[in-house]
Length: 613
Image 1 (tube, rainbow, N blue to C red):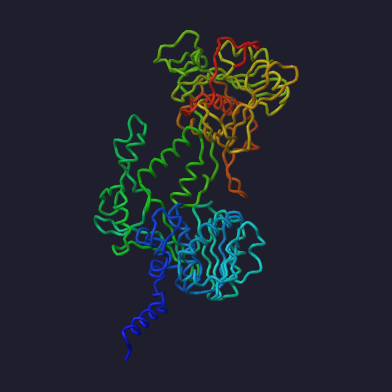
Image 2 (cartoon, rainbow, N blue to C red):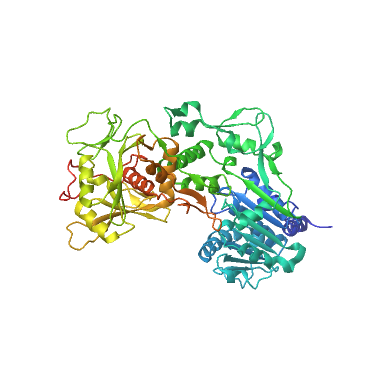
């Protein structure tokens, strides 16, 4: 017969040696992870707030899952899932495993700051750490035979000479071609027990991760409508902006942020944008779950997907999307659209395929006609329109773009309105720099709005433009440049700041501006399509042929778009080039877009002896 003390002792011992694994990896993780140090929500792990992570953990630990791809938005739990799975495997299925980050530096930071710190918050794992383990090492050693490597995927040598049960690849869209397959091959020695987990935000269509994910059953996270309980995927097409958010064609972003709702695809109830509504919709006990959309190409291949709608404010995401659209419409800057598509919607990105031809159109006016909507530049370097009182000393907002040839020039003069509309004022061929001077004076073009192509005969162009204090312009293969606006704010644009070029014998330095070929041509084509950029009805026929000479195509090898002049086009592309340069000059003043990077004191003459702007 045992004493009371003996009973307490036995009970305590039984509690200590009782297995912590209940069969459910979520229950195990919530019972054994005391804290996630990098989480904004501190304390014991609770996955009820992120049920897609809980379900991912159950799917990943299923012995029948051999390949698991996770295509998910940023800041929604991919990293936490990988670390929880690592803890579970160390304690419950010990074997060598490899965690891959994009490069060695990120691997070191991830392992030290996020993985090893979590080992310390999980008592069953902490108790298994070997006495010989070096806590500064990229390899963690455990007494039960588990071993965790953390390396960079870019370094191919990191993928060699390892026999692994599990490989977890993070940000797989950044991994060089072939490296996912190379890392996956490390699990072959474990035969049917081997497991590969590849996680990523959206990459590029056709990349190795995209192809891998496309071969799975592609399961999307579905929610249950709090109103009708219908189970359905989170889909951006059901986001609804308030009717009052758009006034006179302009979006009020504050109204969008505060009033956006989500419409149920079944009962058409507009769900309120709140954490509580999202939490209710995502509850597993109400039916929220992953739903497969296609059969997998092989047994054991599972693909999971979730986007920002499951855990982020729909209003804030709506603002992000509208700003991305604005950047594209005003600056032909596709980077924000791409970022939103890849990081927030968690979809792979593809540039528009096929040939795209600029859709230039004639306007109902003749060359040289007066235009009541033409903008003006005041002596204080402000751009105003005709509805304002035009101060004395103002000059019309007109650009002059010059395409340099061997022995002659093509030139275009164009008028601009503050709305972004423009009209062709003059086009033709000239023989001398002096004739260009006369053309600028005749049409009252200020020197700050005159640009000359310096792609050919650069030194001569630099000398002539420095003497006149005009701009030298040159197209570039780069997508963007770091520039400062008038207020000094640094940002990315598809054109550079003015670069000073020393010219021997000249008082002033030449000012050269680079511009992105792809982005500028995309913007011009968009303006033409929307009938903002037109030409006069009485232009020469060759002007129109040249303006529509280039086409936008996708490179079959790289998948990247670019504009080309087909060999069949014998008319040249001079009016197209002039239109591009005139556009750059206008954009820098905020005519297209509203953030200017150019502000100068204007003068009414355009002679070579002017003062510097």
